[in-house]
Amino acid sequence: MSERLDAWPTLVYEDLAPMVDYVNRVVQVAGKYTLDKPFEVGWGSIVLGVTPRGLRTPTLRQRGVTFTVHYSLLDGGVVIEADNGSRTVPLSKGSVAMFYASFCDAADELGIHRPRSSLICEIPDAPPCFEDDHVERTWDGHAARLIWTALNLASDGLEAWQAPFLGYRPRVGVMWGGFDLSATRHRARSTVPTPHQPPFMQNAQLDAYVSVGFSFGDAKAPNVGMYAYIWPQPDGLGDRSWGVEGAAWHPDAGLVRLPWAKLRETADPHQAIVAFGDAVYDAAVATAGWPSDLVGPRVEGWYMSRTPPRSSSTGTADSGQDS
Image: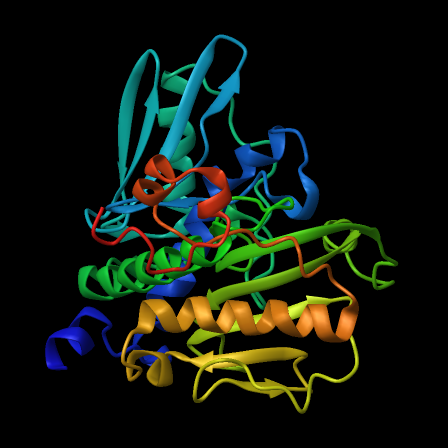
């Protein structure tokens, strides 16, 4: 039990908040490059992948150079890796403004144009632009490892939940604006976006979707843990069960929440994330008319490699464990 709890560490918002705030700002710098990519439904084109040491952009291509940017949270540095070389920008100390200037200089050396915008997005009370953020910050390696560990563990569960979905599902990754880990399932059904929101938020609501993710919370709602919602929000969510003890519907926020503290106390936190996601999708089927036949078998790849389709279509999550 103690070994499992150590693998799923205690996360306290107040302890992590300074580093979450810092990382949220700096990942937006390279995140801006993902806006150069063709738009995908639900902003699936922009997410940062969780790597063995941090967060990485997709492969990015400009005229004459192909590159990726890796935020190595476990090393306290940012690596710009291109086909013509690489540069490392440290995060050890200084301000966001200093980091942005160093990043742009390094990008220039590799022939990569600077981000087309320096606006800081979705962070309340932040300065308007990276160049304006002169608060001195110190890198906290312990907090950075906890941030990565949480994102890595949650990604593993969300990827397992997403795997059998037969419809459009962007890859699991970090939305660099709000700094939440996101897994979404989309349905080709047009909706009416909420008015009086910024265009990027309205464009995220063009089609119906189910979202399950992980967030560190914020000062107003310091809720570290899993969240979920259904867009458009249907009626009838208040009386449902959400698959895991401790998960509950919060009508004021329009979210189902599963606190990290409750998740790590379950017998199998990884499987609990899958069960939580399944319960949310079941709610979408029951209350919002989502198709029940868009989820295939949840089995290992080894099982599918050796099992004829007629048999594999009825497989279970445990199938193939002894393959």
